[in-house]
Structure formats: C-alpha cells, structure tokens
Image (cartoon, rainbow, N blue to C red):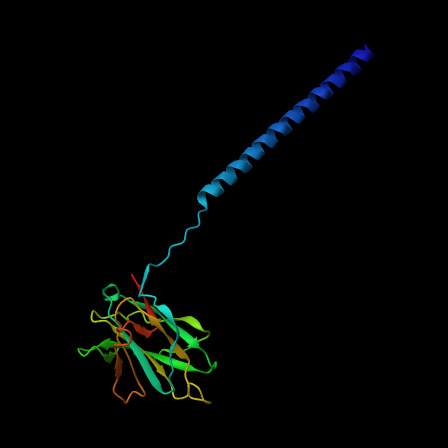
Length: 218
C-alpha cells in the first residue's frame, strides 16, 4: 500500500512538471509571436522619405584651359542671364569658377541688376549687401538668401565687384576662369563703378565668357 502511494505521488509530480513545461513552452511561443509581430509593425510603419526642392540651373560651360580673367581691384566683371527658364523665379544660388586663389582675405561683393534696354545693368535688385570670399579653386557656391529676389522677364545681370582692399599686397584679385558656352554670351567689365561698361561679345563668336552659373527655385 505504501509503495502504491509513493508511485502515485511520483506520477502526479511528473504530471505537474510536464504541465509546467508545456505551459512555459506555450508562453515562449506566444511571447516570440508578439515580438515578431511588433517587429513587423515597426518595419511597416517606419518609412524614411526625402523630398528635394526642385531647382533649375543655367548652362555649365566647359573649362577653357589657360583662359582666365586677370583683374586688379577695384574692378567689376559681370554677365547677362536672360534664359527663358529662369524668368519669374527666385534666385537660389550663384556658382563661380575661380581659376587661381591668391589669399584668404580676397573678398568680393555680388551685385544683382535688372537689364536695361541697352542690355546692360540697369537697376540694383539686392538691397542687402552680398559679400563673399572664395574658399577653393574650381566651382564655388554662394547661396543668395533673399526670399523676394525674383528674376525679371528681361533677365538679370550678375556683377562680381572686387573691392579696393581685395588684396592688400598686389591688388590682384582671384581670377574668374573663362569657359565655352553653347550659345553667345554677353559679358562686360569696368575698373570702378564710375566708369562705363566695356563690353565683350565677339570673343570666339561670343561663346567664351566668365564661368558663372545660376540656380533658381521652381
């Protein structure tokens, strides 16, 4: 009789152990299922997207080797941009290709004009001073952070104004490289703001000009 009771107790204990193991296994399955489901939800809901602001850029000229515009400060050099795709749009940035950089203190100012009936700079568009310094040879980007600067239908004249103090030693400015465009370009310069513009429009059929580009917001 005592042996039967001991056997019954052992059997009952084993039954409890099996039930506990089965329950624990079921809990693990449920827990694992919950984790997998959570991961699935996270992967489905978290999506990273990037939205780029559309921009239009003017032609990128091909570099004309050994050609650059050598000037001594003070001087102004500029070019007319009258492409139809940039009219009535906000000016975003100006790109200028500098061929050689002489000093870190060579500063300049960008002046933006409307275009007159003589296809020369007419009325100053930027009331805020835009002073910059090139930081390397090649293309340099200069953001124009003026929200209400809209390019007129007649186009825009971009003028780089090198100050008298651009280079205190030699007076020579950083050189703006010259490039070849697919169509005729009109560019000009003058020693100071008191002089008349000197126009260049026949150099290699007028397709060689300062390497300057514009970017506008769509």
